[in-house]
Each structure stands twice: as structure tokens, then as C-alpha cells.
Length: 329
Image 1 (spheres, rainbow, N blue to C red):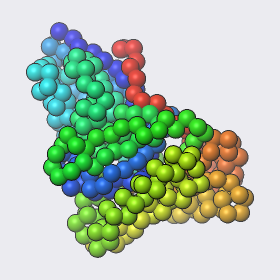
Image 2 (cartoon, rainbow, N blue to C red; image 1 turned 135 degrees about the horizontal axis):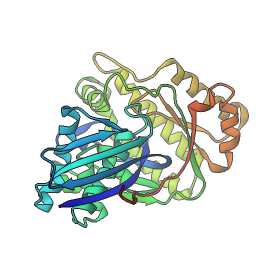
Image 3 (cartoon, rainbow, N blue to C red; image 1 turned 120 degrees about the vertical axis):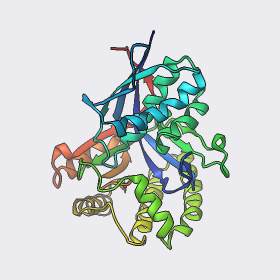
Image 4 (cartoon, helix red, strand yellow; image 1 turned 30 degrees about the vertical axis):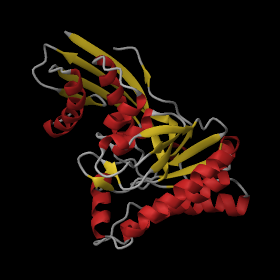
């Protein structure tokens, strides 16, 4: 017996950040968050549930992964196998068209694609809400990559796994764009999961984080409704800097910033303050800087940034789609 499926899912960048869990194993967040799905960065994943296999196999970017990485994927796929009452072993072949573990949300697109393939291959026919609840348990931000446009991930309440899910807030097809300034495409010194847990447990600033995120989220939703990119950018910048401030105040403190990150932030501020362009920065758990801007200014902003950064460091993207099926290899 062979059950196969292949999907492409896109990364997302949070404009209102997710930073901290209230439940580790279920990946229930302390706060709600809001993101923009990106067209330029994505993962393609194929699953083959095969009765001839004696153990799960996981290949990433053409390289067979070790037992530890495969076990992590297997635990996630078990969520779907249990629902389908299926005990078939699986071969997972995944390719990231985005740097892995560099703060460009490769895990979000990876687990979103994997959730979609398992859902289709095993004939589960789960709706998007149910699928986002499962995807969240692989990587929190993966639940947001199950939707295109601008996406809200609701934190839910207590330890109720079913109350925390994602949904599309807005299509975002009204002239939004983002430029990623890649400062370092290598792996991060420590994962987002490690960083957020250490921050939650040791930063005296963290107790203020949930309240300020709730305020930012409401303001961001109003800015989106008004299609006010300047207001969106101002809120996103402030929210990102507050998140990174909680890391600096952890004990011991740490940061994902590199010298190039600060250079990029200053360059974006110069674009806005000295040249009158609509450009705002945000950063996730990694050194790379993302620039929110109007689609009709992308070319101008790109040319200005290219004076300070190599062109292979500058990646432009429009708003991305929801995951979609591909032809099985």
C-alpha cells in the first residue's frame, strides 16, 4: 500500500510577535499574534506512507536526517496517524526554499506543508481550523502558514488545545510587500524555543509583554482595516523591539542581533526619515531584518538598500498564498 501527497506552504513573518508558551507540549502561546504570509519563501514536502517501510525516513534538502530529527517528525505525524487509525511508516521528503533556522520562519512553512500532506494522504479531510490546531503542535507559527494574506493566531484559553487556532484576517492583496535583508543565513546560536522559554522564566520585563501585545494587536487590526501601511509599520517596529528587549533583560541576557542587524535597522530608518519612503523594520528570533513597505515602493527601496547590502542579501516578496497541492514525484 502506498499513500502519497505533496504540498507547498509559505513562510510567514509576524507583525505582532509570538514569544512565549503557557503550555510546552501543546504549544499554547501566552499571547495572540498576527502575521503576513510571504510569497517568496516556501517549503515543498512530499509524504509516502508505504507498507514496505519498516521505519520512518526523513530527508531534508536531499540529505537523510539523523534519528533525533526523524523522531521529532515522527511524533508530529503520529497526530495524523492516530486520527486515521493508520500504522504505516512514512518517507518524508522536504525542501526548503528559505534558509533553515535563520529567523526566516522555515519551520512554519515546513510543518504547515507536512500537516497538509498528511491530511490529504491519509484522507482525513480536516478543515482549516482543525488543521491549524494540529500544525501548531509541530511549530507554533506553522498554524499561521496554513493561510494566505494577513493571519491571526488566537491564543485561546487555559490548557484547551482546541481554543488556540489561526484564521485569515485579511487577504492583504492591496499593495503590501516585504524585503528581507539577510544578515546571516546560517543556523541560529540557539533556537526560538530555547530563547523564548529562557526569556519567560528569567526576564523581569516579560510580565508586561502580554498586556502590551494585546494593545498592539488591536491597534494593528485597526490599521489593517484602514489599510494604513504607515500605522502598521509603526506598530510592528515597536512590537518587535519590545520582544527583543525582553531577551536583553533575561538572566543571563542574550540577543539575536548582529552588527549587520543594526546597520539594516539604521538604513531603514534613513529611508523613512531622510528620503520620505514608507519602510518599517521587524525582526524575529534571528539576525535578519524584514522591511514592510508598499508594493509600489519596492523597487526604489531595493535600489537604496543595495547601496549598503549585496543584492544576494536582499529578497523581495509580495503577500503569499495558502498551501496548495503539487504533483507527486
